[in-house]
Image (cartoon, rainbow, N blue to C red; front, side, top):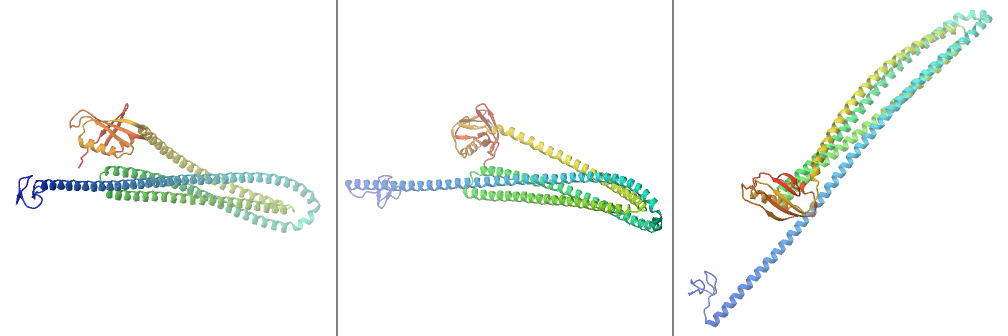
Length: 483
């Protein structure tokens, strides 16, 4: 055993088993040569280890840079896809609203056309009735004069046939009166059915308006939920900035899948509401066309009855006994006219009541809609007023003032959130770091690009509030428990 020249311990072998120093067993020249070779080997070994460490550090840095680049590209692609989906949902909502308004406008135009045609038909009936009465009176006077002259010449021949002709004329007049009464009842029943159909059409229109409003409200709620979920996802992402990369990616993918599912569900509900409104508007339009067709048939029936009555009147005027039959027919027609007018008055009254109810319902709906619009406008105005300051653009050097009380952990966590903001660098920090101090901390920032800094600061989880004082920004931090 020999004694080590470095540590003084006894050892065996070419190197000290205690300190690793080389052991020289020969003369002075051989010993100096061994010492030099040992030093060279140690230096070569250190250089090799340094080169390997350098290569490993460079490879690791390259891998981390590639992974960071890949993550940034994926984030940009996901943001682009979400923006496109939001844009498509907004366009679908605007299209549904426009088509619902067009359907409503078409239904209103159809009702207005039906009302105008009904009024024109009524005026035409009144004019025709008046002309028929005047013609009947003129013809009656002419026929009376003619008959009085003919009675003197043909009294002998007519007296033998009077009984038979009177009996036949009376039977014919009774039959015509019964037919006129039956037609009057049928006309009254048709008018009642048309009023009921008009009422059904109005109710369908009210349902269509209500369902369109519900579809619009559901689309707005879906949009608001999507916006809130996006904000919650952003806050969660910032709160978990220091978590592992695997947990971050899994949570982000789950959040994106849930957002996509909810946005898809909201779009589907808006599309179904729009389809339902469109179908009901088409049904209302079809019912209005059917009502118009029934009104046209009623006018044709009335014209047919009028022509038949005129033919019966001409036939009755050929004999003297027809005068009495004509008088009875006139009374029967007056009775029918009186019954028809009473029915029309009743239908007009019911129609006016229905219109008044619809008008009141429409006014109530307009008031509610106006109140909702005013509340929405007030909310938007309030939000715009709150966001005016947040929209200020900052660039270049900016100073943040963090007032006490605060501790080192709070400040350090706030600085970590600032370091995660793109195109933003912390240039310097000054102030007292001790607890229970009254001296604020000032943080100098350098913004490489224009950005809405106030809004970014307010979205950070550690920030309580943000105020603007001159050129400086005062940031009050929350009291947090950092583990």
